Length: 85
Image 1 (spheres, rainbow, N blue to C red):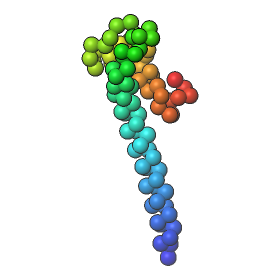
Image 2 (spheres, rainbow, N blue to C red):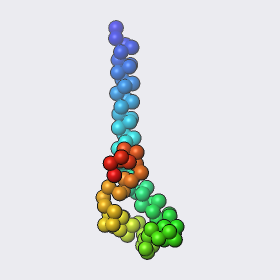
Image 3 (cartoon, one colour):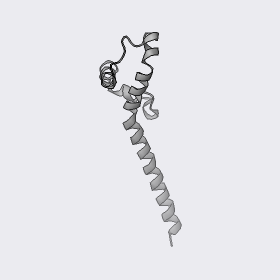
Image 4 (tube, rainbow, N blue to C red):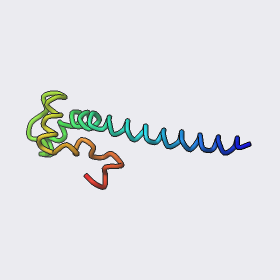
């Protein structure tokens, strides 16, 4: 019987699927996390001169980041995208 082989194959499949689910969820949540951090730190960014005027809410932050920094800036700091963006 190949019971041991089936368990090993099942573990490998589950491991890969769990890793893919983690990558997808982190990639989907990254823009929201980036905007949250920008909103939390906008006071300090204004003091340093990195931001000229404060954000007027979440929607304004999304629009300005997209317009000023581009689409891929929402994933800045995510491990997979660190080397390319």
